[in-house]
Amino acid sequence: MAKRHIVVIGAGFGGLAVARGLRHARDVELTIIDKQNHHLFQPLLYQVATAALSPAEIAAPVRTILRHQRNARVLLDEVVGVDSGARQVRLASGIALGYDELVIATGARHSYFGHDDWAEHAPGIKTIDDATRVRAQILRALERAETERQQMPETRGQQLTFVVIGGGPTGVEMAGAIAELTRHAADLEFRYITDACVRVLLVEAGPRLLASFPEALSAKAKLALEQLGVEVRLGAAVTAIDADSVTVAGQRVPVAATIWAAGVQASPAARWLGVAGDRAGRVPVGPDLTVPDMPNIFVIGDTAMVTGEGGKPVPGVAPAAKQQGHYVARAILARLRGQPLTAPFVYKNYGNLATIGRQRAVADFGWTTLSGYAAWFVWSTAHLYYLADFRSRLLVGTQWVWSYLTFDRGARLITGIDGAMPKLGWTEPVKRAA
Image 1 (cartoon, rainbow, N blue to C red):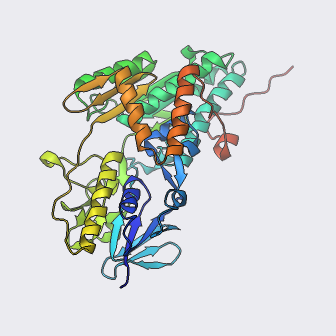
Image 2 (image 1 turned 180 degrees about the vertical axis):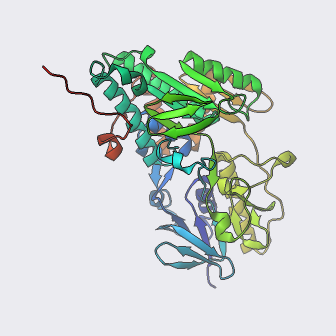
């Protein structure tokens, strides 16, 4: 009897959950396709961008993760289309790969709300390349401010101004981490930069930070950021971004680096399938996570529009993607037994977490809330748990303990093209006559 071919597009939390859920299925041939060769723990990418962690500590090769799963193979390729009628996935390499069941778990990318030209000057953080580029900009800004303290005093303020756009968990965590990095580095390692020289600005168009959290926790997060020295601007829309400035509520702010954390757009899965996506491009799916009229195609994670309790969308977070992946694996196994899974997917919300910095965090569990050290401990424990393997947990946990005790950020490396020749919009210093 021929094995059933399951194709999974995307090796994120959802895709890997499907693969692992099918690891004991002997009558399944599983193919995982991803354009990156590694699984990445995106919630901690901001710590790579702020030199708290190295990329290898939060990423692992997909082949290594699945090396003991004999029914799985991995393809490093990019999907360019899906033919649902012929049950084929078209790849950039020219291969047309047939499937019996297809799982699309391709995640999301940045959304600039119609201003895609901003992407060049305000990178978001979705990949390791994004994170290392931002890290190079931040560290180069500090180095340049130290070097040019006498030659170009008129631009020094710009060299030490960092803007984060978006007041959700990613923006809050990023702003707090930049504040800690720049201030501690200034205090400990730079001779001509003090923490008073650095300006970190967090911009949110809405009326408060962390809109999905209770208002009391939003207020505590804002206070914690301000205690770190972050300037929080609420109800302020960004209207322009260029190489060396951001315009906020009509005011032009010269900057060293701008980081985008304001919105996401789903992958082009809706276009592949020829269906209408929602405003964020997500594919509407049924209670069993299949696409209407396409019972052999599942869509999960940030790519899917899944309705939860009270008609509210299931959030695009790692726990939701993993739960959906486990559900899809059970559904496929039930089909193999000739007993289709009839119970709908139900998302179990174990809480919302956001960290602001050292010993500062907020947590909402629905039935109770936490803030301060207790929330920070819960946040740290939860993120260690969701890392892909024991090695990553050990490395990250050890690094966090070391950083906590010493304030040291050992990944302060300026690497790559952006590190060697940063394009930050400054002119070269004027050579002075002897």
